Length: 285
Image 1 (cartoon, rainbow, N blue to C red):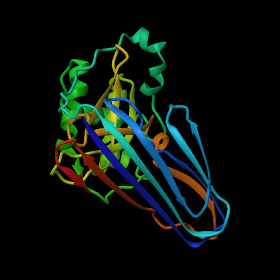
Image 2 (cartoon, rainbow, N blue to C red; image 1 turned 45 degrees about the vertical axis):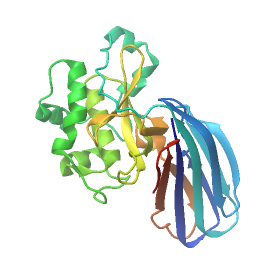
Image 3 (spheres, one colour; image 1 turned 60 degrees about the vertical axis):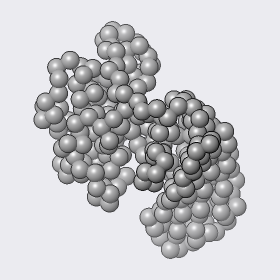
């Protein structure tokens, strides 16, 4: 048993005062996958009206509204998550779908193109390049393991506005881009697949944890199985899910609008994790 403390802070600065702002915040961890949310607090500066609701994908959404003029908005989410099993996970081979059954299943919407994951000829070419096994379940697992062989993880080369087509051309990106690429492959192969945003908590003594993105595939038996193409492995106990959706647009941690005479600066984001193991060492990051 371990307890994970997470602090996720976003600072948005405005060169010209914002007269009002509206934000949707998806930073509250979901229960499941061996995790249980123990505590969650959202702190906002300046003073804001705060409400909460569940969205279409059953994510908890915090609605933050600031009416007064402000030059800076700080949103800090503090979470405590209990984690029951931190044993390494094996990459599971999913059960294949029966086409007729999938056609009438709610998961079908995740097998269709989405705004950030359109159907592209480049995806079909990528599948050929990966030289995946002919058996569909094995092909899916192979794609998760092999994407990082031809794509390079490089921070700062892409942004949330970078299209999937650009990522497939550049062959570089971050976890969000790897997730979108695997989503595209899975859907091209006929699998329902959803985007997951959350946190990757490291082992004690490893490099600091961070926010992360991965993919869940809905198998023919109804289970959602997690795959992390950035690391070529299964999503295990160290992957703490916060929000799910068709792609990043449905699960963005903070998304909003404001009224001002000038654009805002790029947000400053920091993530701090703390892992406490009863009777063992502690880790601060």
